[in-house]
Image (cartoon, rainbow, N blue to C red; front, side, top):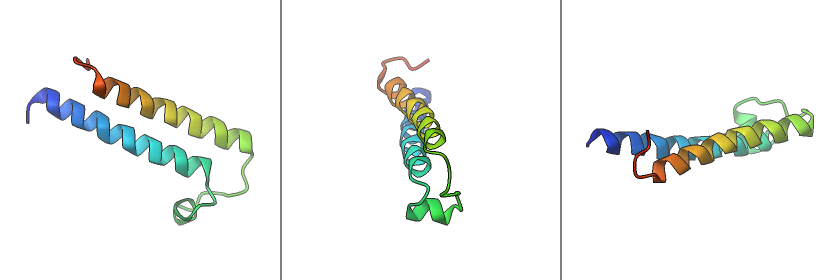
Length: 71
């Protein structure tokens, strides 16, 4: 695998990982959130802001992975 292919693959993995993490932080009462022992009694604004920021980073990784030169 070339260096560019390795970078692109790691960006796609980061994209998926961040979107899953954004879901987990948005719904801490879900099965995965309970499995990770996240507190369910948290202010909704903190959940929304945290999951939004994680999703923004995830989408930026996906956007970079689609670029011709992701440097």
